Structure formats: structure tokens, C-alpha cells
Length: 151
Image (cartoon, one colour):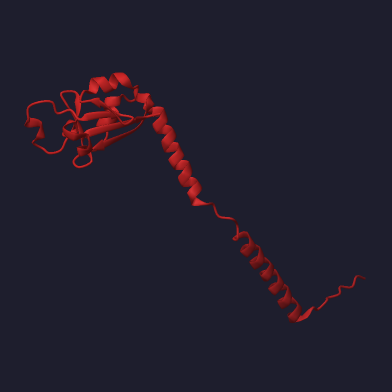
């Protein structure tokens, strides 16, 4: 009736087929792992640009006095920003307000005068100067200097 034929490829043929299949899988694995990696500086740029965007949005929500008192070494004393040079500096008599400089123009030692001149959202940068850095402004800068740069 029906005859069944067996084809004997031998052990050599099967061994070669196994080797080809293993080599094919190894090649696919190797080539798939050789993908392009992401540049980490792009993620850093994205993070820093997001931080800058957040600062820009918050600029309108934070008052000038809040921005100044967020800087290290500045504290509120009688609702005015004062540069804290030492722990016993608040006991001295007289005006302890720092000198305010707006766009390299000396404004004076009154926070109210600087607050009337500039809106808080127009402030680009605030720098605190003390010691030898403030000595450039003479005796006016003896309590420190708050330099404000606007846009």
C-alpha cells in the first residue's frame, strides 16, 4: 500500500543546521543590541530649560522682598531685608539696610525706593555683595550691597 521513506541526513547535517540557527540568533541579538544610545546632555538641557521656565513663571508670583530674602545671608529685620554679617549685628543702632544698586546705578539705602522703581517680574538677577566686594561703594556699602539687574 503506502510506503514510508525515511531520509537519513546523518548527524553532520543536523549539527550544521543547529549551528546555523544558533549563529542566526546570535547575529540578531548582537545587531539589536547595537542601537543608538540617547545623549544624556539633551536630558540635562531639558531639565535646566524646565527649571528656567518654572523660575520665569514664578517670577510674577513672588514679591521682590521674597526674592531678596531667599538669597543666602539675607534676613528680614523690621520687615526690611538686611544682610546678616554676624549674629550680634542686629543690636547696633542706626540704619542697617544695605545699599541698593539697580543696573549699576546707586539707588540708596531704602528698600522702598528700589521697590517703587522696579517690578518684581522685571528682575533678571540679584547679587549680594559684602566685605571687600561692597567696599567699591564706599561707606554707603558698609552694610552690604544688593545689586539688581533687570531685563
